[in-house]
Image 1 (cartoon, rainbow, N blue to C red):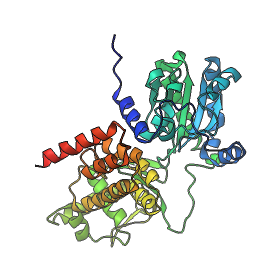
Image 2 (cartoon, rainbow, N blue to C red):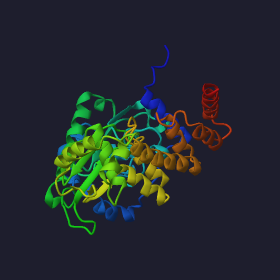
Image 3 (cartoon, rainbow, N blue to C red):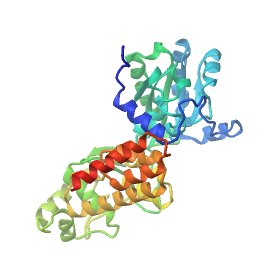
Length: 395
């Protein structure tokens, strides 16, 4: 009998793990938060306020199944691991302990690490793990988000044996994660929808547009999904801090720069969504404390945090828009992201980039990956094959 087929999700994770230098025979995950720092780190983390809910809902169920419930931060570091003493001792053999890092790049393929990388629910069953020492375990994990900003706060995981490989496990995890997210919205939680006056003036405006054709906008705690045209308009307004005239907005939307009356009508409709006080006129401008995912990526790059920028980059901004102003912003962010990933020379980041839809034909990234890999790595042949393919298609 042959081996069962490997899921694409697992194959891609194995490749990221190999590119990061994780060894199949590596026994334990590394400790990245020492014991004497763990309590302070946990108490300062937003999930500290949601943990009692998770413990009430899920920890006892995990213990009764001889499984573990674990909560990680947004970097893959385990902040809490709950289980029976016997199960906790077994988990120590693979380094599945509080303070350890299960980021794919240091621990290989695993549910919390892969869920963190993909920002989506993931299940990893036995031999799907990259490291041999973990292949006796199965795990399922889901992300926990800040519902106000959309940012990833951490991962909720259940790890155990074959008893957890059932649909009910993922359903229970999703429900528990949702309860935690709602708990963080409560005004007394100290996190979420508490609006404060800031020097910038205006209400909070959180915008998500990377990898999407229709932006998600949270205005003062209310979430909206914008149409493609309104998404383009908002991009132009975010990029023009001093505001735009009607003609300038038209030039940003249309090659010909015509359609001023249409622009005015669309801006009126957008004002109804955002609020009269958020979108102002003469000139058209935003009066809000604006946070966007693409300017967040640019800020991380400016600070030298290429890893954080790569993790936050969900794809080109409004990828199908042909509005000249949007294309200009999209190309600026994408070019900066591409240059940073290539310049960093990290094989794990380059592997993730070249496996993405937006990086699959990036010959510069494939060449950088080939050069970053050890001579003995079989992935060098894959990188060279991709370079040959791209070269052939360009001829």
